[in-house]
Image (cartoon, rainbow, N blue to C red; front, top):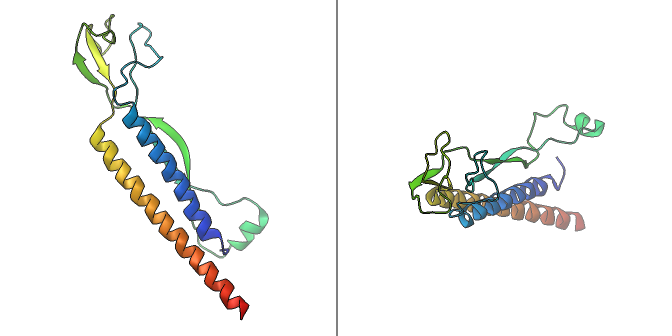
Length: 160
């Protein structure tokens, strides 16, 4: 493990949590967006769909030197990366309002005529996710600062 690997792992966590916060902000900003540019095959408007980030451990480099160094060690994660951004497939909220321009004009499966589909964004869930992302970000900042302090102390020892 190199001197900067702890900082690198924390930095990857900071980047991932920042993206997660961006997605949460987008979800909250669009929680009342009933009509996106997309429409169904029947011509009914499709509302905004909640987005979520999928994290996975970051793979270590595939070069020979890295494999040689880690041959005697157990597999240790090298940080986190966002592998994809998924749309939440939970059902939309439905409201009967035939006068609305976003109301379904043609009946289709699960959407009767006159019903408006609202985004599947739940503000309580978004606030919980935001708190979690914020705390994770803070934890990564703390770990980064600890790694930085260790590196600084190591340099001071080297001064002699």
